[in-house]
Image (cartoon, rainbow, N blue to C red; front, side, top):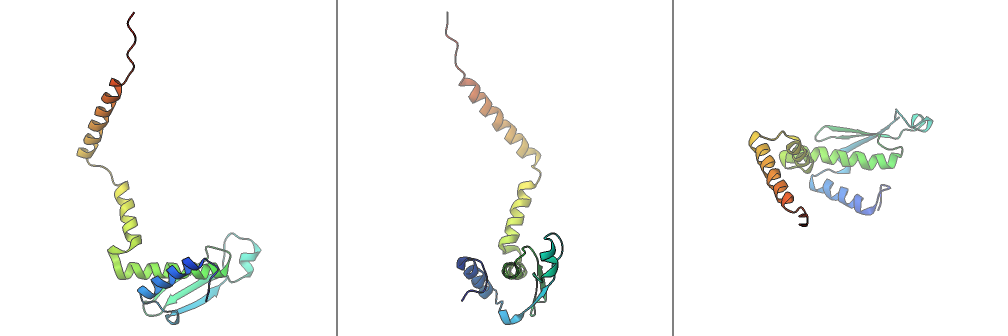
Length: 138
């Protein structure tokens, strides 16, 4: 039985994550609130913003990313499960690992690493200079 307007595959992935972390629908309090911001009159008249509270952990999520209430319901549940995953797994969660990867990529290189890179670049440029065409003798 389909609850959301997303593909069955995405819905099954969400159900599996919810099962893995012990998130049950009966533990979730769901309310609909009027959204705000860009979107015109439609957004101001309808209650498309979704508020979820996971009662056992006390985690609260509010989602108004889309104009559709059904899509916001799905997205809010996904955010809720990600937060619970982060709380349960801590350092091992997928989101945390991705953040750490980005942090390492942005980190400033050490002096030794910079010197090594420059040395390798110089060697590569010397190889390339040897590949130049030799002018014919006259």
